[in-house]
Length: 414
Ligand SMILES: [Zn+2]
Image 1 (tube, rainbow, N blue to C red):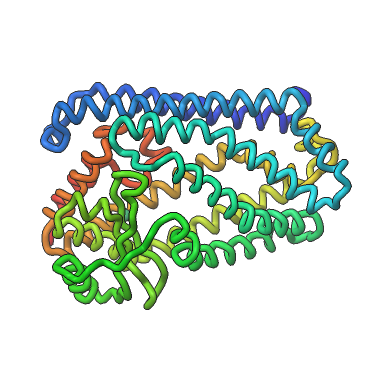
Image 2 (image 1 turned 60 degrees about the vertical axis):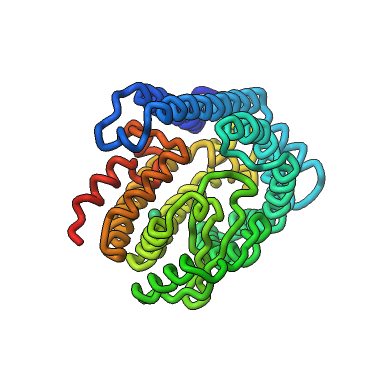
């Protein structure tokens, strides 16, 4: 570890720089809570709702900020006290080959990360979310979810880590192989997720016969969007927050609605929200995002391949040699600023897609009224920030702020 090693400086600037960027965005965003509300939003957020959402956002922010400081502190202390070097030698002393040792190191660090964030998650769920009436999760469900998550990580994550470590330990074209492998794995997960993974956490039940089901099928027929099944999922077992999503591809596609969405929205609003989701599909947003994601992955893996060959990079973290498993973890620390940059691009694209899907939905149902009402209700019920700061929007918002969506909706010619 030395100040003359450029990797040491780069990692330090990366970790501390991104932390400060987030800190500034958080402060600016909180500052905006006190702003006078524009007329377009005055009827959405009553004075009472505004007071409540300001408190809610402040408390949620306090948790994530405390977590960020704790994480930064732990990383720097572990790093500067030689923790990475010590962990690597300890893993090597277990006497396994480089692949098993690498996976072992990755697993230990991931497990530590998960457990260290667990108290914050519990504080958020049972402290803040519960106080504002969102949380429905019991401690038993919370623990079960955690165990299921860890088991999935072990079953899916460890083999993936093993393949990646093996590529970078043995193959000259490792970055290319890893890229093809990750692309294949992402497609497999899109297929597997609604069939195997989501049912572990949510219960799917067919939507019963009735006006809503007929309206949904009528919409799907009108838009020439084949749907095999409409399901209800028991989101209410965990949170009162509402949602809707699609699962699967092509002819086996099913629509899933959270029971909480059905409880809190009118039939017209639900149909408009689904028309928005169908809009994403019709406008080819999924393949575009997938391509963007793969392009980012390609750049990241090329950088990774280059970094893993540099003993200086490892020396910056007090690690001897060029062990790949440890390298994958350490790379995450220097990659942060690039992650922010590619994130900006992906989020900007996603927000553009939201406007397009909104326009599609308004045209599909022949009015912007139901979607407008649906969006207002979602924002109000979720206690969303009425006027988020642009920096926060750039860094984190996959959806445009409500006021922009409402304004864009009124401008659509039907
Ligand atoms: Zn959308």
